[in-house]
Image (cartoon, rainbow, N blue to C red; front, side):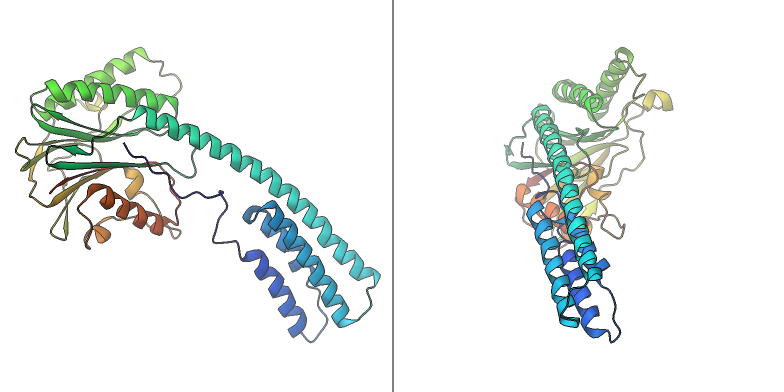
Length: 362
């Protein structure tokens, strides 16, 4: 398994870093270009405050020092004499800088704590998810897991793939919720899938075994805190001759089939409820759709952390435009293309975990 972390850096927003310098430059411009005397000290004092969440401790102090020196230079430029009012204004900039530096230190500690929690969450995630083989016969396989920026809790995204007597069977799923409870469900689903993939004759049988495993788990666990959990999943099977693809979609984002510069969304013919909800819905039917898997094609499965990722203006990410352009057939490189495009769309900021699995037929 390959798990790639999102771009995090030091946790400070990169886009806003020029703001403190712009405030100082704006103060200078207003002071020099305005005919009537006007105080630009509020803008100078605002610069270290703006620097506190955006820059390092040294950068915050340096910004305050520059703002103080600029205020002193402007006062000398206008009158040549530093009167009491000018001294008070300059002292206020120094005092604001001290407070901004203290705020910067507190925020740095919080960022370090959150980053440590994220690292622990990702380590647990990597331990829970099984390693995916890079090859299964002629098929090539790659996986990626990108953790959310805003959350330090362990997510419920999962994937699995294995060669069976019935062909290559694979699954990408997403457990409702986060934290330890979600990890418990992930282990239950993965264990049930590994067993069912080898022994069940068809995909409906695999789905029913997963339903039964979730039902047993819900009966024995304490549901007082989190309530019932359900799992959206795509369970798929590639035929032994690798020419056909069968898909059982249980309320999950549909897979994508990339071939010949085109992308096909493998929508289910009939919608089905997520795993764990079939008994409540009174629906034991498991619809299965059959598709061709031509040579030179790539199958991409993913969780909703990909398609629900938003750009700053609020629009969701759509992988189809990028995959409709030339992409590498090697599955790892293909997923890296999606991750790079996703990062460009969101500004390297994910609000939810995202798991992806790609299988290519050379």
